[in-house]
Length: 308
Ligand code: KMH
Ligand code: ZN
Image (cartoon, rainbow, N blue to C red):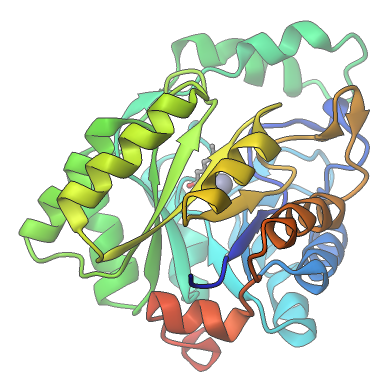
């Protein structure tokens, strides 16, 4: 069996600073945690930026440049920049930094959906920043817009013009159909790297039968022309990573997806989650892929083709 790629999604745009003191927000913190995660075994770093003053998700290329060069200097990990940004951002804003940085890899969300974060607000009593509570509360009327036109634009700007390949974020069965549609149109080519996403309110819940169904459907649509990985947001993060590893898939962890390391215990770093999932993978008798092995598996352009 082939090696397992660990993606670490370091900070994201879902959690807010009041939820965990360990959530990295400044360029220094994001770089530091990303580098430690790579040293712990993550071959791919999935990255968002935040405003270093407020911790709010940011699309500003200057904020990305606060960590990208250092990560490139100190690791050989594959840098994957989100094109999802935050669901409250326009596509133009979401694309600003990836267009400038031209990374080897980008995320690409495969459908428009609800992205409801508001239940998380109930657990917080002490808010650090004024923006956090309304940001979460207003997600009860938030549309995460990823229309076929948007998807085509990301494919053109990042794929065709800049040679990036994609982490196709699929939160539902229909998102696989959409990927097959773009393959039919000749806008994407295998091997596809598909992230099955569980646990976002608006997408699939973390149900093992949904995972086996997604794999069965992807097998039908893409044959052996794809690799899958699994992320489960929240408390199913590690159980679903274990299932994926056992089924021939790859794994994604990181504080973007869960702030915990065990029930009732906050993860103190991204590296801690990478170490834990690495132990699970190796305990199953599997081997973790290096960044260059990930590049070979996914057909990436290499570090030289990036602009940071
Ligand atoms: N936050 C995850 C549920 C993206 O960055 O494009 C999905 C995600 C989206 O990682
Ligand atoms: Zn993300």
